[in-house]
Every structure is written in C-alpha cells, then in structure tokens.
Length: 112
Length: 114
Image: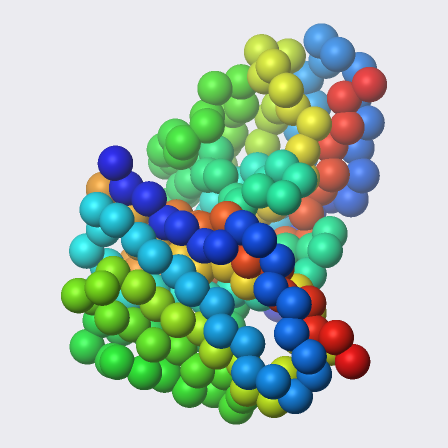
C-alpha cells in the first residue's frame, strides 16, 4: 500500500542551526512533492514544490531535495529561528486520484 | 481579499445530531477538499471535488456527506453515523487537482461532540 512517512518525534534544535526534516514514501511514483507548514490550530500553508527532475529547490532559508531513487525528500531550514517552530508536512499527488496525500508531519521546535 | 473561509471556528454538537460545516472560497478554484485532523495526526481526506456538481469519496468518507452546487462552496455534513466526529476539520481549494497545484487551506473548524 502507499505510505508517506515523516518522523513523528519532534525535532529540537538550537537557534542558528540547520534543521533537516525527512519525508520517505513507498509505492508512489510522484512527479511532484510539496511541503507545507502548519502552526497549532491553523490550516497548513504551502512552502515549496519540487519536481522529479529537480534535485534541489531553494527559497530564502529553505531548501528541499528530492531523490526519486531513495524515494525521499529532505527539507532544510538554515539559520533557524524560534519563529520557524511549527509542524512541517510533506504531500504527494495520489496517482489513483487527483488529490494530495499528506504525511503526518514533523514538529520542529527551535530553542532560542 | 481572496481566500478561503470556514465557519464556525468552534462547534459543539450533541450526540445523534447532524451538523454542517461551511467552506467558501473566492479564489475561483475548481477543486475543493475536506480533511480531518486528529491530535498529533496528519490530514486525512474525507471528500474532494474537482468540479461543480461532482465529488468523490476520500479515505474516510463514512458518516460524512458533501455537496458542490456552486463553485465557491463545498459544505460538509457530519452525520450521526460518524462514530467519532470530534476533530479539527480543514477545508482546502486548489486551481485544479494536479500534482503541481498547491492547496490553500481555510482556518479550520474544531468540532466537539458532547
């Protein structure tokens, strides 16, 4: 069956360090992968989309990589700040239907 | 101001009652979605609609119903058949349903069954 896995344990890092979050998937052949940020009690907000032919995508302090051989995407936040504390979700298009399937998310906590 | 709105923000319901959650968008998006999120969990797809007057079941459609009579509106009814309806409900929309289409989410409705 199709599965998207993100580390369910919270990631705690010090301000200024680089945070790296992982998204692994099985039984998908996605052409695209998306990352969203969700703050407590609010709806997710889109951050980045990466295509299968793009190994890396950057936006300000954010960087996403996409390895279709490993079936993995890494999401990096450089020079992290306490304001980056949130839950980060990856999402893939479900090939059987025109809708996204979301991972369960990883909570990031940046300590000042 | 373009966006997607949900109402109410908090909703309380007695067991055995149906309740309808509102979702409206003025982004001119064709596709709309309903998700359920339980504490510490990810988003689970309830229903989605790619076009007006058409919708499909998601992964957890049992006990829920939807309608899509207008492009901008996609209300969700939580029926008494839903065994555990207490959750955070999120509505989203996208230009279409393709993998490149990003989803825009509403602020959510927190439903509590008393």
